[in-house]
Image (tube, rainbow, N blue to C red; front, side):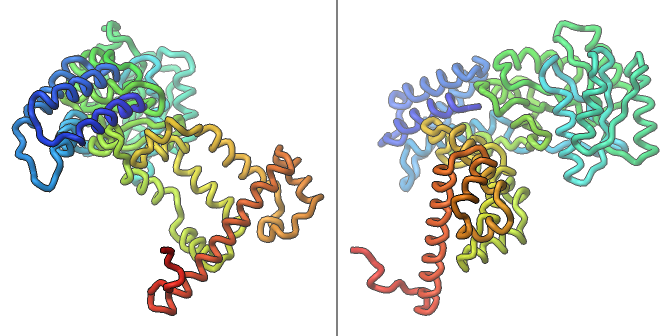
Length: 448
C-alpha cells in the first residue's frame, strides 16, 4: 500500500546519509521532499506540515553523537515522529464489560460486515466466545451476509429478520448472549453517509442503550484525506474509541493511516490486510512506521511464521534435511507452509528492503510458479513423491497431463529438486566433517 511513499522516502534517506553535519540549509531540501511525499500519499496537509515542523525542530536541536552519522540521526528522528503520528503504541481492545459490547460503525462500502467477521475470528483465536449481531435493518441481505460470515469465522451470530428497530435487536441479543455465556457482543450496524443524521442518531440511541466499551470506526484506507472528514464526523457524534483500517493490501496511498490519529487523537486498533477472515492484525505504530520507511517488519513476519508453522513438523523436517532425506512430499508441505504466511507480496513487504525489491519483481509470476509446482506434486502418487527415481516417461506424461503443464516443465522442476537434494547432502557432509574437527574449517576448503 505504501510503495510510492516508501520509494520517495528511501530516495530522501540516501541523500540524508551523506550529510557531514546538520544545518538548517542542508536539511531544508530533504524535508521539503518528505513533505511532498506525504502530500502525494494523500496525508492531510495540516498533519504533513506539523510533522515536518517537528522533525525540523528536533533535527536542529539534536546533539550530534560522534559514533553516528548526522544523516542517520535525522532518519531516526523521522522514524520516531512517524511512530508518534501513528499512535506511539499498540492500543488493545477494552473487553472489561460482562458482556462487553463493541459497536462497528462506518460508511457504506467500507467493509464493515466482513471486518466484523474478522474481528470475531480474532477474538475466538485469543480464547473469547464472541457473538456477532446483525444490526443493519436497511441493506438487503445484510443479515444473511453477517450470518454467513459468522459461520465461516466459526463464531455465533444473532439475526432477527423481522425486527424493525435496532434497540429491539440489541435487547434480545443481550439476553441471548447472557443465556449462552457469549462475550463480547459485536454489533454490525448499518453503513451510512456523514450527512445522514437520522441514521447517525439511531447509532447514538444504540450506543446509549448497550453502553459499549468500544466504538470502532471501520475506515477504508483508500479514502485518503476524506478519512479526516469521516473520522471527525463520527467522532463528534459518537465519541469513537478507535478505528480499524481496511484494504491496507490495496493500492491506496496511505493518507488515512497517517492522518487518523493526528486528527481524532484516537488510536488505530486493527488493520485489514487482505480478503480472508484471517487477514486482520493488531496495529503496531512502530512496526508500521518501519514498513513505511522501508525498514521492513521482521517481528510481524516471525509472529506470522510462529502461527503458521507447526514446531514439531519443522523439527522433523530439519532432521530430514540434515540427513539428506528431503522428499517431494516434504517439499509440498513446505510450499503449503509458505502459503499460510499470506501472499508472497505481503511476505516480501515485511522484509527490510522488500518494498524496493517488489518494484523489480514480477510477484504474480513467482506465485504462479508455486501453484504449478504444487499441482505437479499433487498429481503424483505418494510412492512417486517419496521416490522420484521411479518416474519413467509414461509416469511423467501422466503427471504433466494431470497438472496442466508440459513434460519439459515437469522435468525442470524435478531437476531443481534433485539439485537441492544434492546440495543438502553436501552440506550435511561438511557439517559432519567440521564436527569431527571441533568446528575448524579444513585449510583446503578456504579459497584464497
